[in-house]
Length: 301
Image: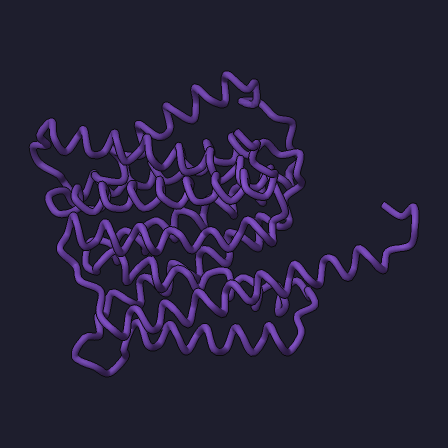
C-alpha cells in the first residue's frame, strides 16, 4: 500500500472534519425541531465541554501561561464564536442545511477581504475580482426580492461576519497558545450562554432520543475540531484549505436524505460560483506565498 503524502493526509483530515461538522449540524437541526435554541445549546455544550476538558487534561494544557493581551484575544475569539453559534443555529432551525452551508462557503472570501482592509494584508486585483464575483454567488443563493427568499438568510450572513471576526482574531494569536485550550474556553463560553438563555426559554420534558442526538452532535463537533487541527498540521494550507468545500456536498446529501430538502437551481448555481471563486482565492494566496518565499534572501528566517 502506497503511503499518503502530507498534502493527501491534510486533505483527508479536512474532508473528515467537514463531514463531522455537517453531521453535527444535521443532528442539532433535528433537536431544534423539538427543543428551543438555548436549551439545545446547553445540552450539546455540556457534553462537548466535558470531552474537551478530558482532552485538555490528557494533553496537559489546562493551565497555559497567558499574558493579559493573549487572554483578551482568547475572549474576543470566544465572543465571536458565541455570536456565530447563535446566528448559525437560528438560521439552521429555519432554513435548509445546504442553503446555509452554501452561504457559509463565502467566509474565506470575506476573511481575505477583511484581512486586506483591517490587517493591511496584500491582496491583488485578481483576488478582489474573485471576492466580488463570489459575493454575487451569495446573492444568487439567497435570492433577495424573490418568492424563494428567506429572512433567515440574513442570520447566515451574520454568521459569516462572526467567522471573519473569529479568524482575524485567531491570526493575531501566538501559535504557542494550545488549540485545545482555546476550544475548551470557547465551549465553556457557548455553554454558559446556553445555560443563561435556558433560564428564560424552558425546554420542558426532554426524551432520551433528544438527549442522545445532543450527545452525538457534541461528539461530532469535537471530532470535527480534532480533524481540522490535524488537517492544518499536514500539507500546505493552500492545498488543504479548498477541501473545506466538501462540506457543501455533505450538506446537500444529508439535507436530501434526512430533511427531504431538494436543492434549487439558484442554490446550486450560486454555490458553484462561490466554490470556484473561493478555490481560486486559495490558489492565488498559495501562489503569492510561494513567490514571497522564493524572493526571500538566502538564510533569512
